Image 1 (cartoon, rainbow, N blue to C red):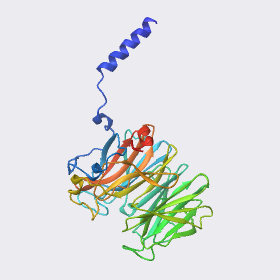
Image 2 (cartoon, rainbow, N blue to C red):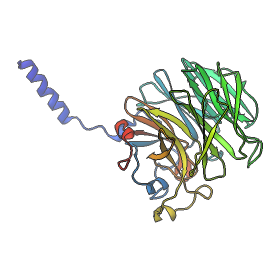
Image 3 (cartoon, rainbow, N blue to C red):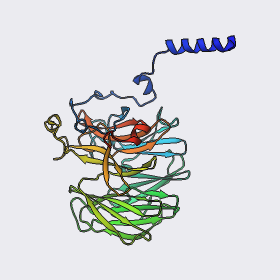
Length: 377
């Protein structure tokens, strides 16, 4: 071994020895500032998700907005976007909330973030789909009519164009490469409460703007947010929220998607989305606490009669939904979204577990641990 190599090894050893380890503060140096309006700490010693043991948990969690709800997480080429409504509850605009739709972008796979220009409040009910170099942003204007805007950079957006028909909300829009088409299990929201006008329409579009009716999947008077995915053979699975209920429905159909086998699952699905990582399918959803942890049961109910939190389920090939991973959440709901990065699985969600005010959080799961699942599995 040459003297040069030996010297290099010695210098490297010295550098590693004297260099301080990376701290949490260093990791989040490029994240938005927090603790400007209220302390960034738990309002309760134990939160609802603490009472759900045995599931995969994040490596780290960080608040990225002191107010917010309904975040979305998506990628356009080498950029990652987080969009959320600047509200401090499910639909509340108090404190310093502006009511805007705010967004952040990362150019380095989630290590640092920059804030983008906000869109007005009419755009706070939204969903995103990406095809090639174009982002499609679907907004449910005044809860009456869905509109779409498009963008090539997430900053400049086209004028809104009405799509399909009211009062259908295009939740869970998906672009499918195999069919080269957009698909959505759109749900009608005629107003609050159960109604015979609530129904799920499977619709499709070649350009993301002109949508065509395929089939009415279900006519349930409490149907709500619905998501879909394709198996490799083209079989479609649709998960349907049963609003005000304690179950959700699963509809399975094959092309041309006009006949459905429908089953029921004994749990809630709310704000749900599908994701595929490592050959496995996952579903994020709000959940209702069913445990017996007295610390959780003695907590005040922050929102409604249920002790809500959020779960990530693994959907097995037999369409069984197995609790898989969890994040720190309680209160209203968390409406979590996932995205795979070089470092792991990013998760963004909103939760009322700090100061009883809804905030936006970002967390990261170790990819190997996430795909391996709970130790009991």
